[in-house]
Image (cartoon, rainbow, N blue to C red):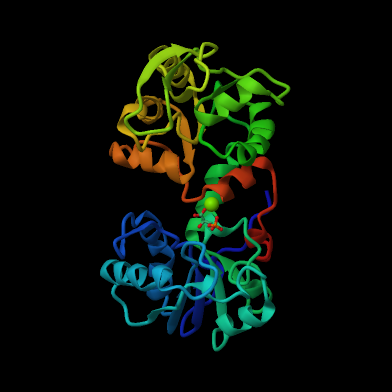
Length: 347
Ligand code: 3PG
Ligand code: MG
């Protein structure tokens, strides 16, 4: 893989540095509900401050606003950042997506972001699959470097693309099936075993476009409706009553998936096994999270839902690498070039 040049090689003393981080965090009641991505951005900011940067202009998108929208103001993110890293040299600019030029990858908007700055550091791994003004065009306006998080994400994830310790186990779940087929094709062919749960498993039952074997559930927790308190029972994977939905993997599948996980030496897990935000359909995802955390393997977990399942169980430090990227991690593992990375000159 092409390695972008590192912020560690940038001369930043007395320089004004534009930093793009992925501070796209969940908000609840006007406050940051999960600050994982903010904390993940700190090492690069600390490095810049320690090395005497005169000023740091920090930018990020937040949500998917269609223009200026107070519900997506960056303010709560800035407040949390200031609690974690109070330093007057850091200025946080407003949500980049308030400007239509951001998603258009507009050079004019990139120039506005870069105005008065000397150096650009991209640390936004979670947004690196987007060719937007703050991730791509701006790297043509200022000398560009990769931040520490971006570098680490590339290093850890690319281990899955090279020689791996075997058995190599891929676990795929979640709802966005089309997003994941590319990764399944690219990594699944190299993995020794691919476990599929969640909505993915439902779709593959109807139509399986993959040309290699996957391990599908043998039983599922079926629900009469897509409702938190719906009537539910465990049925065979092939025995879903008409009109019922499989909302979690069943107990037999949980133990067989956990056995696969226990034998693996390399694991990539993306996507929950069921509707885990509803406690009655969370057991499958929990079982996988616990097994992955306990496995004596190089384990990488990507995607916001799997990450949340791990952190709700207090297991976020028990895996080898918990990626801050969902779509970005998937695209990287599909073998695609990430525009935000490609825009930075090579090391
Ligand atoms: C994410 O949360 O997946 C990233 O921040 C990218 O956000 P986006 O999917 O709205 O571009
Ligand atoms: Mg996304």
